[in-house]
Image 1 (cartoon, helix red, strand yellow):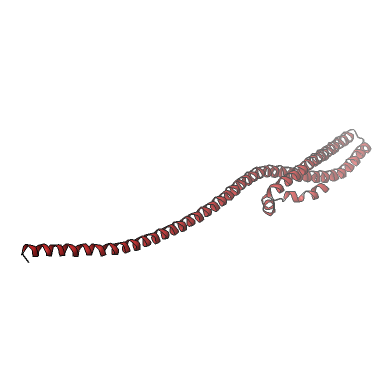
Image 2 (spheres, rainbow, N blue to C red):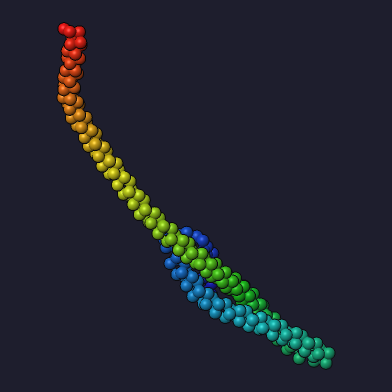
Length: 227
């Protein structure tokens, strides 16, 4: 019954706890599933063998009971026929069979217990394998989602970097525009100073023309008055 000791941990296996401890859940669940399937094949073969032992033990016990019943009937017939010696021999055989029955009954109980344990182990392994397959499919789907999310995040990071570069260009454009505005302002200031000098010069001559016109008008007024 070394098989019972070898697989006792399987009965207490907690699939979720194993997954929580895995550094790489996807690889771990595939490996554990392969181990379970390998163990399941061995447990299935051992279960069939132990169930066969149970049936054999049961058959031997039933045959022994039949022999005991048969010796009892023969003893009765011998007594009825007045053959006490024959009856005594049948009863002696019955006693031997009764002692043998006790051993066979214990063997059958043990075989029955072992068979039940193996059937439970078989069913537990089968359930675990199905649970692991479902976990594997779900896990692989989550891995794909995570990989896709990672790509999206990486693309988003690249877009953010491009946005930062665009902002830098905008700041550079503002600086160039400011330089152009300053140059235009200086040009306007220079142009304004030249115009003011020219205006001053023109006013000089404008004032001269005004004085000459006044003199002419004064001369004409004196001529009119005969002076």
